[in-house]
Structures are given as structure tokens and as C-alpha cells.
Length: 114
Length: 110
Image (cartoon, rainbow over all chains, first blue to last red; front, top):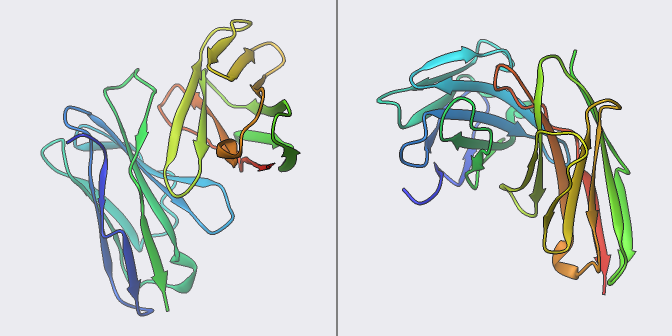
């Protein structure tokens, strides 16, 4: 696609429910990143994919968070048993390949846990 | 642990002023530094700096990297209200992980 596409753009969920956030990277981009940004705070790295494998999962905050990528394309970030502190914008980004560091961000998915 | 410090945290200036935003960093396996502008949700790319001392320019914006002193600056001349945003810097490590600073919130008063 023309840009990084994320869905849903907004999600309100009850505490304890599971949510899935989807990211569709720019066509042909092999590297894909997930970041989290809480209100008024900086971007936190969550996980990075090169192709379908995740060399760096160091930013996932707990075992309630998981992510997968299939077909070197779409990625899904899953948050199980959501907590109020999970409320944030979840940003996905992609870049052409390893070694190409210009990364392009999607518009984000705003998650509110009530 | 990687560190990225941006200063000032917040800056308010009048339209037409020139501003300088600072980014200092300590990361292992440093490869390059990126600057982004964040107005709403998605940061937009401004510059990628790899070599020390070489200024990159785009219109009224310019940026330079000092790999010896471990910092970068972003200059904006003749500021406009559309420049109001959070400006983020992010050093790139050898393993592709970007570590973002908390940003400088720039507000331009008409």
C-alpha cells in the first residue's frame, strides 16, 4: 500500500479483555516495528520484525503482550487481559530492509482500557 | 543502558524566530541518528544523519551530528505556526532498535 496502515484507529475495551491490533506495512518493506506511546510520553520500543522473525522482543512489557507477522506482511500485536496502564497509542512502522533506517510510521491505534 | 536526552523539553517562541533543538545520546553500536516531527499520532521523518560535521538541510530546517561529542542539533529558521510539534530524535543501534528521546515540544505563537 501507499503507507503504513493500522487498525482499528480507536479501540475502547474493558479491563481484562484481549485486544488485537493490526499493522499493514508499506508493500515491499521487510522490517516492521511496534512502538507504544502513552499520553504525554515518549515512544517506547516494543518489538521489531525482520521478515517473519523477531530478532528483538526486548521491549514487550510483559507476557500479556505478543506479536506475530506472517507472509512478511501484516503484523498483529495482541494484548491479553488488558490493564488500564495499557492505554496508549500503539504505533507501527516499517522500513525497506535491514540497513535502511528511514522508517515510516502508521497513524497508530489508540487503545483505551476502562 | 541507552540514553537519549533532548533539550529543551518545551519551547515557546514567536513566529519568525530561529530555534535550536538539542539531542544528546549514549548508545552502543551507534550507526546513525534520525529526527522526526510528531504533530498528531504518527511521527514524520525529517533527517537521517550518519556522518559527523555534515549539515543536512531541508528548506528552513537543518541538522548536524557530532559523533565525538555524541549530540545532534536541529535548527529551524523563520519559524511558522505549522512548525508547532514535538520533535523527536532517535539514535539507531546496530541491531535496528531505535531509542527515541522524549522529544522537545515546540510551540510557535503567531
